[in-house]
Image: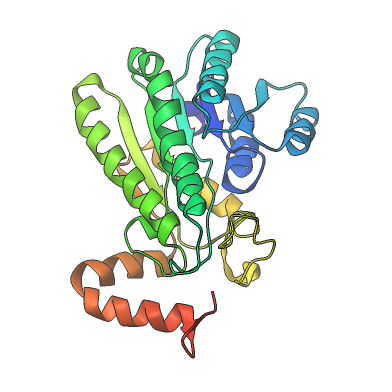
Length: 269
């Protein structure tokens, strides 16, 4: 597997935390050349410092901004000569009922989770086609099953899944592999940074992070799937159960999901 990534140029959005950071830590020893971006300058600086002697390019960029994406992709190509693998990992979640949430929350989540992937992929596509490379979208189980209190997040991930499936079909004869990855609940900073009803960071996770799949374990499975040119990757047992139940027993899935996320009529997770 490691030979697959030797001298491959991998562009990863959202690399300062969670799954993105874990992917970088695993891929650099495999011989990959990596470019990453994030909105968090301090964390990127620490990452760059830790890997100062390795082929790692770190840039501050907000993927919801087209010009930032353009700067990131062009800088990656200028630095390394092209892009073999693009991993659209940057994302943000939300926590709030529809009736309570400001419209700006839904727009911001969609701009980052969906349009950020569209921008970066469109910009990197000529290089990826030339190299017969890979496009990866880090989606979510919420892209298969709508989750209460996260309706905007679910919408963005449904959009991402459908878009990736469409472009996969467009690019089949060009030998470009498109894959979407759907983790279940994974231990990362995404819940702490999730937007509340007013559009500010939630600041704390409603879940027990110790019971969740680690970002490192998730990254290992993603790397294996990229090397195998997989179409989709659904992670965690609960995630696989959720997709199965929602496909074949949707009404039952509604009731189980309601029970999991609510107590006495109030959102608890």
